[in-house]
Amino acid sequence: MLDINYFYTFALNNKHTAMTIIQLEYLLAVANFGSFSIAADHCFVTQPSLSMQIKALESELGVMLLDRSKKPVVPTEAGEVVLQQAREALREYNSIKEVVQQFKGEIAGRIRLGVIPTIAPYLLHKFIPEFLSRYPKVELEVREMHTEQLVEQMNRDRIDVALVAGGTCGDEFTEYELFDDRFYAYVSPTNSLYKKSNILLSDIDMRELVLLSRGNCMRDQVLELCQAHKSSQSRYYFESGSLDTLMRIVDCTNNITIIPEMAIKYIGKEHSRQVKSLIKGAYSRKIALAVRRTYVKLSIVDALQKTIIDCIKH
Image (tube, rainbow, N blue to C red):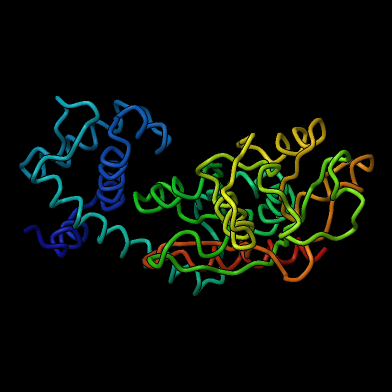
């Protein structure tokens, strides 16, 4: 097995130390994306430049690291060994940069943020401008996707931090809590529950409940809450990937849906009476930032957490 010290020794004895780090980053990108072109876009370089650096690394090591004959591109047996060591080397390299930045009192670098669809439209615009204003040396990339996809992307080192509902990513991630987001019912004016100011979960007819589509973690949370108060078999008429779509469905039918508190602000006055509190229990989800336990740029995560909390308070 290749020793990680090889990379450090090579870096110290080679005039092109930065290029060696870049080569490892390029190699990881191709392995993650299975494509030279996508990896080049991700690394903000041309494909010929990326290919040249990987070939130089293969020449230096004297082995082929990637099987280019397969689609997607996959690591060779030697490549798998090198990739394992390269991840450790880059983790140590990033740790050094993080320590130096903390010593200088500097928040800098790139952070790739993932966010779930039931948070993105209601929260991103509140904190992103402020975050970039506070930390001008930070480069922010944002992608929207479901929790399961975010976990996969973090495990493959394509995303650094995820803005999610707490407790949905797994034990291998550290969570930074932000705030509680209560659940409310959104009721059709023609539904019998419309006349009530507050309703019980047990009041909801499961046949009238419209849900987010599979893959949305909030769907699972809502089902868990509602089915805990129902013994009858559930039957669902509508599913959608958008909370706004669910509310529009409710507006033109006799149905009900469950929405998070952060969405209420964006409901028009003409529909405000359709929002009902859920009584006998503080039904909510915790909003949190999730990161891999091995992630090293914790100063940026701390800065992001503080900015979001500050913006929510105001």
